[in-house]
Image (cartoon, rainbow, N blue to C red; front, top):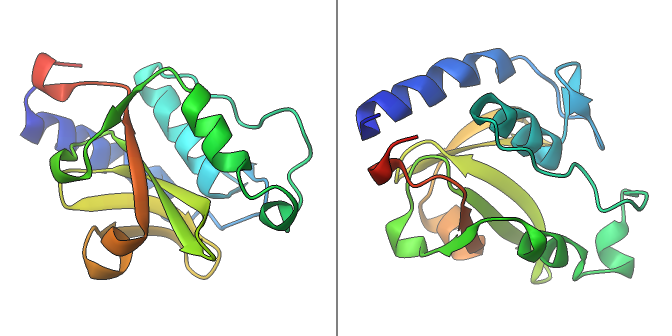
Length: 148
């Protein structure tokens, strides 16, 4: 699959998320949080990620265990991708405040990513100033240069 074909497939799949509301711990199309979105979306590509680490995910989890998200990211079966070489289907993760990683999304191409926002539900955002400065890493599960 070429890069344009991959991006087209991603954009087509993203249509079903456009009216899905943000719901803390949401794991269905009736409501998703950012992790729920990533887990749900990757299933379209037969990539099965865990939707939790087995512990309750409270709203303030990051206050009591600020390393929780990054520990979980490191356990995933993928390779670290360079922020200078992002590609479609890379999982990107962000530190929104206090230097704690609490947010994630999926690259659509090398400049845009899809994610769920507590303030705006499903979104497509550009990986520019605001987001690029908060991005703390990327994980690649599929190398689209070698095909899907």
